[in-house]
Image 1 (tube, helix red, strand yellow):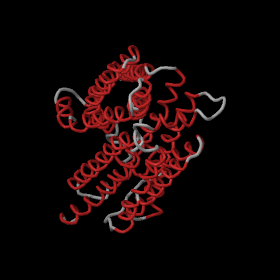
Image 2: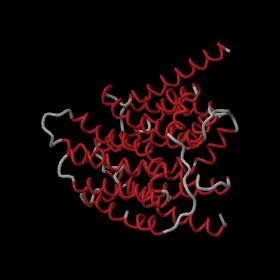
Image 3: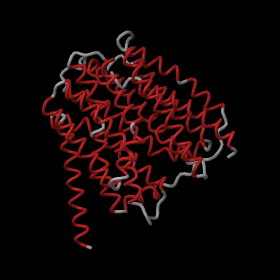
Image 4: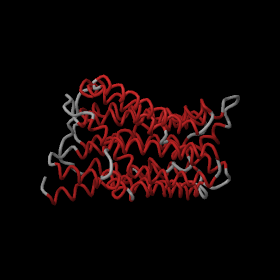
Length: 389
């Protein structure tokens, strides 16, 4: 694509994703608090179960959105039309959340918005793959990811601030209204290029690669299961300690900023000293220690420490783990795009498991232990594989 058109199109798409992720993350600092409040009106139910269900449902529908995104692309044909589907579904989900008069309607709203979020999440990658030129592809990915990250930060902090002044329902409705801007842009602005997506059979070829399968089950799944420590545990426990949602949103924002802005330095620092696979081991072990330490002490200062240091670990961990997974696909009969879809699907399944694991075990420490178990199983399998050779 001509450079001037490329820059202009990137700017439009960046704004679309900024608004989209602003809307999807505006409740991050108070979602579980609001769910718990609504769950109190359900007679005779297990409170912990009811609190975890909508978040689990959201993650499950996000995974479904990612999974069927290829079919939606083939039906809509144009990338802008595909984006409009994701935005419209997210908008409906936020409206249902805002209009919810009981727990079960709120539950449905989380599921609907989860599906829209899944389409938009994979949409960032689809947009980058519109370009055949590798340089333009990388720039598009970085540029649009930056917009999505900015939207996530704004949504998290603004939602936390408004939660002390405005009813939760009104914040959801306000966010849904703001989505009209990117929805109109997605429908009106011509985005050049068509998405090339493989069939489901192509996608599942990834699972026939035993090295990729071990990586997904023992490394990737535990990592994303524990990612709910920030999105689920922090808002809930900060509220239990008697602090406002603003405090939760500030902690989450600092975590996001550390992850983003320390990323280039920390990724280079770790990559220069070890392979991406060993970097993944370091990331998992460090995260496990922090989560177990907090689970053992369970006081606000330890929570703050864990949130800050997890941000530093995420700054390189999320990059090295993707790079390590990509390397399992060398000389395999599937594309990087197919592997990416499986990668994202497993990550969403991990987020779906997280709240349930906490519920079943009754504590946060189980997240850290799950990381250590996954790491141990992978090392055992890797050792046996070398012995067999």
